[in-house]
Image 1 (cartoon, rainbow, N blue to C red):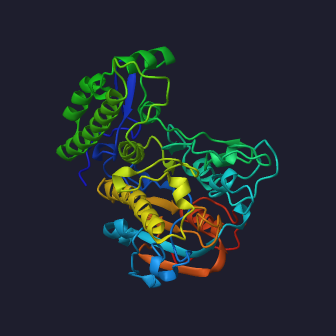
Image 2: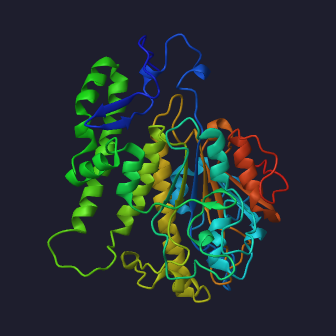
Image 3: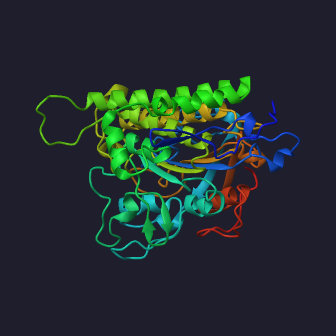
Length: 446
């Protein structure tokens, strides 16, 4: 690593036209003759929690192992990847599958009203129209490793409203529309608009009025900070200039894609007052790309992402799936429907795999962003037809700053609490906890 004598703060930003853009880690932020552990290049843990809606096709249909799209046959290292997880093949050395998990606190006749919101808490909600459950693992992590960043955490989704079912006469509406709770009674809203996410991460003006005016202007954030960027590039070494150029290219590409999405949904047509539907694939991948940028710029170290609503009525004709997702998910007893669900679940995993690849290719001090991340991917439901919570489809990815092994299929004893995974990941991230939810231990294998 090239170490400059002139030292930049890790919190250096590019400024211009009332906006500020956070920067990735540069060599110039690492002072010369200083131990790595005492510099900005010391590994900073990132954590991410990505929710796959409404279960997965495992050995949980009438077709048995023949249709299993998730659980490996082989235990331990170098496990086999089934169809839903095959997109993770290039990243398998970072990915572990954990089997035998059960989230008993999520069991309820209300199902969709509490399933998403109990995935990261493993606490059964109180019977009340007002939310009362437990703090989620992402927010507990944010209290300990997210306080040194501008945003302790971000909460994203592609949609929060589906075909109904998120509200219940016993539990209210909160647990069906978010997977993140700041505490037992405070659900955190999931942001679905990529432009709002971008502005939250990178800012558009110092006041609400300025941000609104700048947003209308549609100018590029990078154009606004170009003069400051040019000055900085003259100050840093060649390797830093490459990192800075790559980072700014990524920011500009995300801006371009958002503007393209907006141009496709506005114009002079006399449209009825109906919700605007953007291209789902573009939205899904934009959200992942912005999480990666947020990690790289250290705007936040904690992210949760709900890939779709639990009761989504979205269709996927581009995948050869014209049926609405939720009704299709209740037809797992039909071979054609089950195969379509495997294809759809693999599609979501493919988007997640691209995200892992991007993290693995993004330098972060002595390693990559993926080396310094702990990521949870899976669902709080097993069979979408039976609405059960065992066995859950769960994977863990990332290097965890050397705390995660990777490339392991950990087959736990049946009905091991899902909370054991959460407790394990918290402890690997350095969060000082002894228990979480209904945990009864940790999972040493991962």
